Length: 136
Image (cartoon, rainbow, N blue to C red):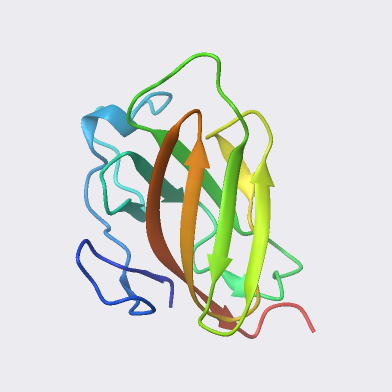
């Protein structure tokens, strides 16, 4: 199961993704006027993580990827890379989405990861869970 921290949750606490309609500001590119996708909104409301690869698995499954579309609430130009710092309490990993928020494949080991996201002078955070049982 893929889960994300809700606003105000304790560090390391993971909660289920929202499955309802995406916020208006995160709907660009969708043909449905009220698209429903697994998603999370950052604690500060500055970014959305729309998960196409739910559930996220570690290692990645051979037949699909851990695809996340990152959408910035404030489209700023020029965009800088989206820098992700992921911590699980014992480990810290870094990932980069070149060109800023947009489509990405973000692979992390199994566990609940706190992500601090930085791009174009903006910062936000959320939690993602990667379940074990992906590719052998």
